[in-house]
Image 1 (cartoon, one colour):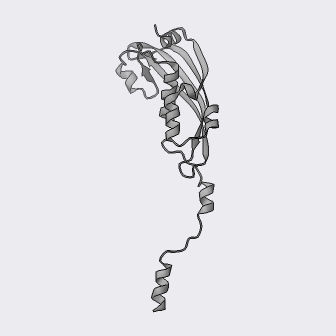
Image 2 (cartoon, one colour):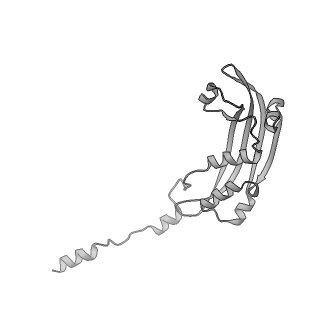
Length: 168
């Protein structure tokens, strides 16, 4: 019996904290998004809580259930002005454990499924969910301050041509 099955069937709780070094795919994704602040990356902590839930029926099939909560403050970078833009994530997921998901489970948008025989680790499960929660493009909601300061009245490049026409 896998660790996830044991947690689900006994409705136990497992919680902990992960560092970025235990999440290499997330580290790679953050680098791809332009996060280079070594201090911020080193301070990144991901807190998770995995809780076994009572079995739930999908059609005629009762499946063991898990709940996963993930909290993290990711040190992201604004894609417009390249200033730090930390983003707090507070994610909640429910999983049904089964080899072949019944049709009713596939139609439920709020419950994902994990294969019972799958040897997925908690770290990889948390990392998968964080990767899927990463925004495509991180930008300040309001216009970026540094861009507002640099944007101003610029001379019209065709003003010189207009002046030549007037001189004739």
